Structure formats: structure tokens, C-alpha cells
Image 1 (cartoon, rainbow, N blue to C red):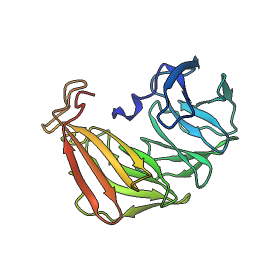
Image 2: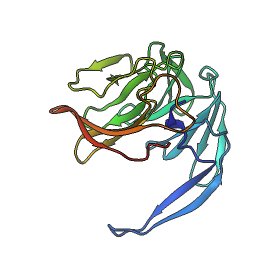
Image 3: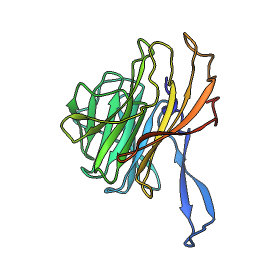
Image 4: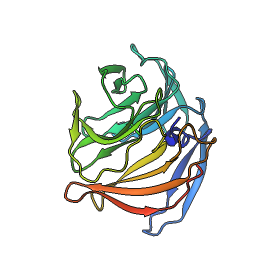
Length: 231
């Protein structure tokens, strides 16, 4: 499975920042992690809490402790999912390998679409005011596209993009990717470790690592090769 889920730690850590610009950073333990290693978590800035989800279990962390949330509806049971916080709509968006899009408003989960991508990366784009998904991974075949799509709360729209990163066709070309949004430069940054041979790579081993950036003026640009390929 793609490595975007590996960032969830067994223990949730709370980051405390000093007041100076070049602040000293101190990590403190914020309570036992209530879910397993396949869960995903995001920060809900409107409600000032972390929302975590895994296999029909929803938890929230208020800075002190975790509490289970009983919702009238729950997403389809699956141990792998991607979460992102949609600041424009003030909802948590969850995508799964069944191509479902679910939203959580703090009270319940709502099924919004059944034709969503299974993305390699998922972020909220401040300037566009929408969630942007990178790629579409097919676990059955190993094929991965590198399209960009944005979510308006009803449907996904393909974002035209030039000079796309190479996609894969049954070669696990981009098997492990992560994406972030650089608000200061208004760019998407994608790091992908990829396996260039046929079949599955050895566990955790990828031959090539690339960094790409995208913005609306320049399209995709290859930035650098190298990095932590063994993910």
C-alpha cells in the first residue's frame, strides 16, 4: 500500500512552539493512540481538534485526550484511507480504495461521491479554495496515473496540467508518493519513490526518488532526483 499511511504514529505527539520566529521546538506525548497503524488523522482547524478514522471508528483529540465519536453513519469498512481537511467547507474529506468520498462535519459522515480517485497525494489548496488530489492508484493492477483533480463538494474536476510526472502501467512506477502545498510559493510539491521494473518491488525498496512541483503558470516541473527512496 502507498506510504502516505505510514506517517500515522503509534503515539500522537503534540507540538509546542515558542513565541520567537526561530523557535525551539519541543515534542510532548499527547496521549495513547487509540487506533491501529492503518488509521489516518487530520487537524480540524474550525473545531480545533484532531480527527482520526480507521475501519468505521472515529476518534477526536482535543489536546488532552482522545474520545470516541458515535456517528449516525460510518464509511464503508476498509483499513486504508486518505484524510484531508477542507478548510473552505470546514469538513474532513475521506477517500478510500472503493473510490468513495465521505465528509465528516463533526457530527456524522456523509457519502458524497462514488467515483473519486484513490490518490497518491491529497491536500487543501489555499488559493484555489479546494481540495486537490494527485494521481489515482489502482491496487488491483498496480497502475498509477498522475492527474490532478479538485473537489468542489459535489464532484471532481480534472485540472489541465502540462509536462506531467510519468504515470505507470502495471510497473508500480509511482508506488510511494506524498504531496504538500507550499502556501508561500503557491505550489504543489510531490515526492515520489518509484519502482521501474515489472512486478512488485521488494518490501520498502524503490530504485528512484523524484521531486516535482506544480503551479498554474508553469505546470509540472521536475525539481530533483534522489532522496529517501527506501520508504
